[in-house]
Image (tube, rainbow, N blue to C red; front, side, top):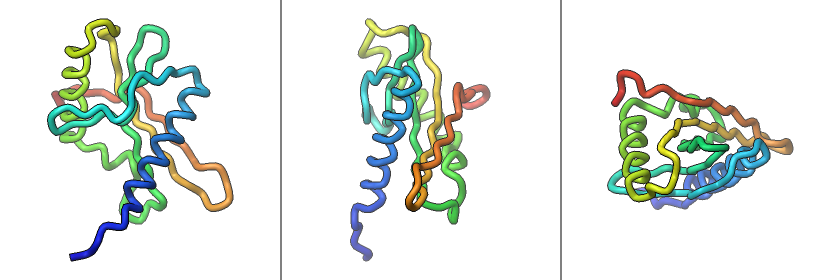
Length: 127
């Protein structure tokens, strides 16, 4: 059995921190990070005005195994939806209007990372 080095976990944590900073520069306010409930997790929970944004962050060092945004499957969307519903039940003081954004962070050797921000992902036909 191959021993896990922790590299992927470190890369993911770095990507989440970078995405958070990127969004904060755009005026988003961090509410929570890595909220876990049941089998789901919200990477970042941000707020802009009266809108909550559940942010799924994907960090890839290459596209060898596909693009980060392609790894947000229907199953993942259902899990995020359920987790966000649970979060809102636990925090009735927060606005009940929310959306899902996906932020893909791709490190580039010697340069600033490339960031793709997909806003308001649709749950239509998923949940």
